[in-house]
Image (cartoon, rainbow, N blue to C red; front, side, top):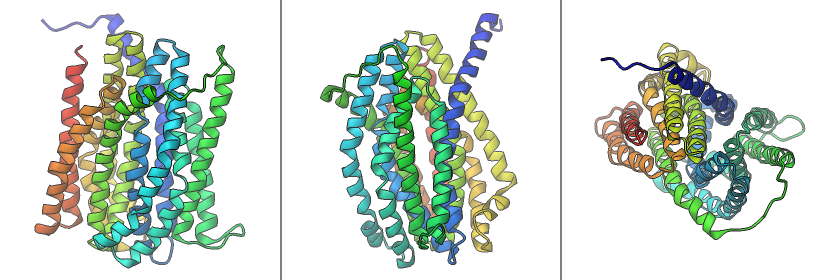
Amino acid sequence: MPRTVSPTSESSWRTDFGLTFRLALPLILAEVGWMSMGIVDTIMVGRLPNSAVAIGATGLGQTLYNSIAIFGSGLLLGMDTFVSQAHGREDLDDARHSLVNGLLLAFMLSPLLMLAISLWPALMQRFGISVELLAPMRSYLWALNWGTLPLLAYFALRRYLQAVDVANPIMFALVTANIVNLLGDWALIYGHLGFRAMGVPGSGWATCWARVYMAAFLAATLLRVESRRLLCHWKIQADAGRVVALLKLGVPAATQILLEIGAFAAATALCARLGPVPLAGHEIALNCAALAFMVPLGISSAAAVRVGQKLGRGDREGARRAGWSAILLGTGFMSCSGLLFVSSSRSIARLFSPDPAVIRVGAMLLLEAAAFQLFDGLQAVATGALRGAGDTKTPMLANFVAYWLIGIPLSCLLCFRLGWGALGIWIGLCIGLVLIGSALLVVWHRKSIW
């Protein structure tokens, strides 16, 4: 007999879709705002005299910086689980305790991350990156690096605010930070408002300013939100046990992010060895794929929060619905983005550069990006749902196997041994994402049967 669904069950699913979407929407806009900074930087430097070199140096610098800075931010992802579950059981003191120690962890990590980022130019020189790319990339990374502490502070404040259902200010912070970044790019790259023209490094300083602004805005939001609560007393106390507990969840989550970003950083470095034009085309496709990825990434944050809150209340069925509703929303959007890449690849590439050679490579790689959109969205949202349930190790293992044991070696084989160039690199990435998305879907299905 076919299974019947009760009206109450249908109503619960509709409610879950609505709640997930309402929480995810400002977080999606925040993620899009985050990513659009890099895209604006790429477009702005793309109008400098040597377009391919400017785009390549900026894109390579962004990728290398993010591979370390976002790993550090990922160490704070345990806050999703701790704060959302504390909020679900209405334990405000414990949620605040996680925030205080999350901020402490951010301050401890920043000098270490800045030191690691400063080593990238020397490593790229040893890797064989051309001098024409290395010189502007070095000064661009120097500027970006000064925004590391504000970035981590912003990230800790964001995890707390979204876990206690204060998401709209996060969206506003990112949207307005883009205005700060755009004005900074215009002033510092080309020399307006009394500033000297700095070229590529000016883009890095503009992004640094924008990150200081984001952290300050969320700090002011936190003070405003918490002053309205009935329990206004804060116990500012360092707790080594809570820091260790955050790291037990955060280290696998951060490692998963590092493995994922590192795979694309490796792909970028491999493309850099092919020359400025393949690298510029790669950066165009990577920026577009990353922008589309911001939507399921925002939904992933909502999934982590909602699954964690439901489990904090002891509602396992609600946690299951929250996870599946988020997965369906994420994969639905990414299917649409894949169709857009197929239908408008050349038009999209033309937005970044007037160079016909760069447009041709960018459009070709956008078609390859379209092939993995569905699985990219699937793995992102499933990772968030698993994080809300306290599982950060499974996504880490999936990324390690699929990218580093299969995808990247295959990229090298196709690119250099078979001579497929940048397309071969992207085929390897595509296969890795298909494997990760499929594996995490199976794991969430098994875990959500509870």
